Image (cartoon, rainbow, N blue to C red; front, side, top):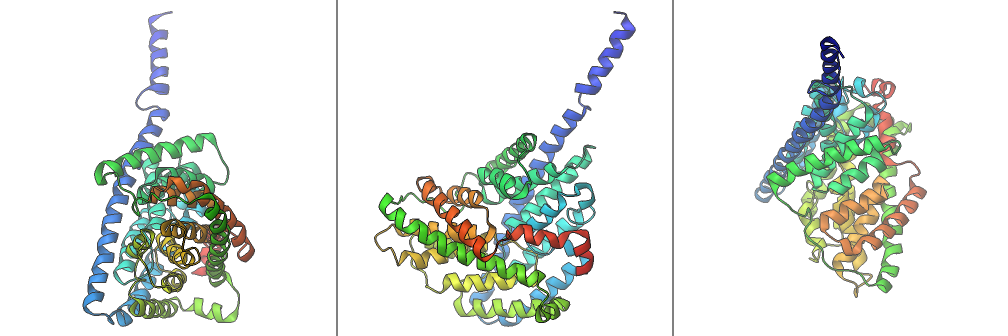
Length: 435
C-alpha cells in the first residue's frame, strides 16, 4: 500500500471514528444534555420549594390574603403565558408527546428555549400564589428541550428518541427515581419500544441521576417506608384501593379532558375568556386553601406525614382533588404529578379507617397507587415512582396489583389516557384554533 493510500485511509478512519465523527458528537450531545438538565432540575426543585415556603409564610401571617392574591395571580399568569408562550401552559408532558411527531419543528414552540424559560418562571409564579401544581411535568418539558438543544449544538439530528430521553431524565431527576424515568419513557412517552431508544434513555437517566446524586445526595422523596402487608390483608385492601382509586382518578382525568375539549356552550364560553375563568379557578383554590390550610402548592408535607402514619382530616383528599382540578383546568403552567400523589395519600387516609388492623402507611401507599394510576393510566410508572419515592420495596406486588386494578377501573370512567388526550391540543391545528 502506498503512502498516499495509507493517508487516505487514516483520514477516512478519522472522519468515522475521530472526535468530530457523528458517533462522538452524539455521545457528547447526550452527556452535555443530561448534565445540563440534571443541574436545571435541581435548581428548579430548590426554587420551587422556596416559592412554596414563601407563600405558606405569607398565609401564616395573613390567612385570608389569598382570597385576593390567588385569583388575581391566576388571571395574570394565564394572561402572560398565553401572550408570551402559549405552549407553556399546563403540565408539559402532553407537549412532549405532541413533539414526538415533528421533533425539529417542535423546537419552534413546543420545545423552544422561550417556552422552557416561560415554563420555569410561570410554574414558580404559580407556586408563589398557592396554585396546586407540581414541578415534575414542567421538568419533563424543560428537560426534553435542553436535550434537543444539546443535540442541535453538536449538529446532530433531533429525533423523537431525543425528546423521550430528555423527558425521562427529567422525571428521574425530579423524583430522584431513575427506574421511574426509564419506565415512564417506555410506558407513557414512547409510542413503541425500541432497543436503540431505550439505550439512549438509560444513558440520559444515568448521567442526570449521577448529577442529582452528587449535588443533593441520596434521598428518598417521601421518606422510607419499611412496613409490609400480610397476604390476607393485602387480598382485602388491594382490590378496594384499586377500584376506588381508579374510579376517583378516572373521574379527575375525565373532568379535565371534558373541560378542555367539550363543545357544550357553557364550557365554550368559559374557554373564550381564559383570564376570567382562571380568576374563578383561583378563587376556588383560595377558598379551599383558606378553609383547610392544607391544600396549597404541592401538599408534599401533608402527604409525607400521612404516609408516616400521622392522622389527617378526612376531608384532605377530596379538598386536594378540588384544588388540583381547579388549578389544572385554569391553564396555568404546572404539573399534576405531586398534587395527584398528595390526593392519593388523602384517599389512602380514608381507606385505612376501613382496615384498622393493617399498617396505616401501607394502606395509604396502596390508595396513592390506585389514585395516581387512575389519573395517568400508567400503572408500571406509578408503581415504580411510589416504590422508589418511599423505598417500599416490600410492597411491590400489592402496589402492582392495585395499579393494574386501578387502570382497569379508570378506563370505565375515562377510556382515553389523560396525557394522550391532552396532547391533541398541542397539534398545529388545535393550537391555532385555541389561539
